[in-house]
Image (cartoon, rainbow, N blue to C red; front, side, top):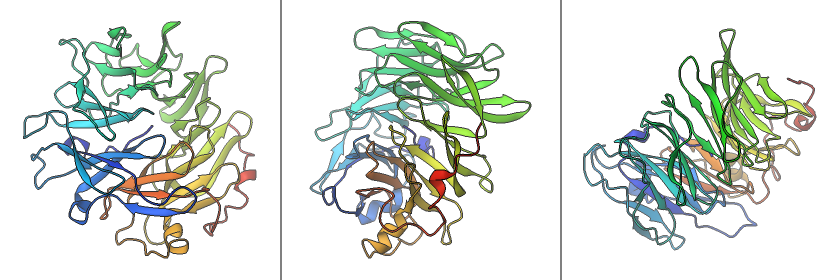
Length: 405
């Protein structure tokens, strides 16, 4: 999963929101925060089943810290105890990842790591017992990973990358410098990917069976691991230019024309953006059999469903600002949440737009976003990509597979 990094160290309050709205089978759009809180809330993560959104609420000052709250199906607000933040004490935190059992990982700015059940009846966060001499990396680009069942955690620390389970406790799986490290974990917790800094560093894979393996890719960084642990995606500096790569044990490294954003659970579909510059960026997917397929418009992909069938992101060339799109990779059809509001629900697009999407549920039916004037929101599209299509010439996208890497 991937999260928004905006303003995250300035977030003294956790917000968990359990989705309401019509049953699956009809389109719906729900603004999650009460009116007074909407401009001060930011969504960061959507649970894989689409029933939970977590994020932040800002107080009158960035130094006002109180316990978190969540929005239940009944529409009532309830407190969700935060990770020990009651006032300005340098214990700000970032929400890194959500397991399929709604276990939420907090990485705190003072080097501590906490886990919390972020659902109805959530108790207080529990500190993950990492050795006192090993502080969790609190740099802005780092990210901590968690397995699908919430039982395995891996994090970059001052002692290297550490893997934790209830059975083994905290065990270092690398030495070296793991700063600014995106650490990701396979669904079963048996594989961990990350990056070691320095001349002898680069992207690595650790598995419970084979241990540590440094990938044979110079000046490389790992960004994501597939759910089955077989495939790693990241970036590498090649002849002075940054390129994406995908690696597995059978094929080794394959260089790609862009930055890797996500990988399907079985490693067969790679989501990427073709350029870091917004003027040239375009969402695309790559497979070994089909090569590269592009969306056809300036766009920024955010996430992909585990089966590799649906992509959510932002159109950067929309007439009235950036639109949130859902792209059906099987049919090539694309739809925007803005068109669903107008055509299906008869609702105007909120002033200031919807802000960026933050995730899509495993079945592709639920999309969440936030950070705009209306705060966090959730849209339900029963069959993504069907219905009224955006008039952007997407009908032939499914056949655009001639470009191969």
